[in-house]
Length: 301
Image (cartoon, rainbow, N blue to C red):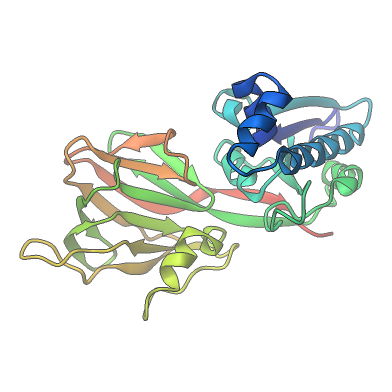
């Protein structure tokens, strides 16, 4: 970090359920009535909001007075300009780290967990009260990092997409997806519910639910391993489509190639964010590999 420039802390959060309810219903009382009419309580929602706000207050007050600071909502990340030396602080659920990771390039990320009873804390392992010490460790080059592998996809027209957890390749409405799939040694025309390509970080989520329901499947990678695993969902056997190439490992330097046969209905998106997608129409060729970019997540000291 350039010592002539004061560090900048970027606090990243998402709009809470409570704030969404107030925006929709206007007042707390209207929101309470709406929830109670559906046998739900506003107290739980409001309590989660207070925990989030308290964590943000602690994280913000721990920033040294001379340092620069900024704040970004998850919904604004595609328009936010990160600086190379930023210290990015995700305050919220584990998924918030995945949401911000695709917009970063080697910046340090600190995950603060405002609600350990609700969030597993895999990517947000730190208590808000640790923020000040963590800021100092990163700024002085003394922090311990987990270099987490990301998955990258590039289309033959130059479009690219990266994700921390997984990529989905398939039909936009989750109908049958048709494509040609090829790995290092085989190629097969398939019709399926789509393909999931996971990192080791994503191996605890969507990919894990697929993996556990298969008698034999590719081994899921570790979070820092420079490899990926792919799974074809519900491949359909027919006279024109096969089911032999349904899972595998993509090591560093290798690639998985998918050629679309889905008209204009094919899509590629990462980490469950369908609105941030690549259109994957007929004849388009997609290459999936271990991304050059890695997430620098501040781990335990």
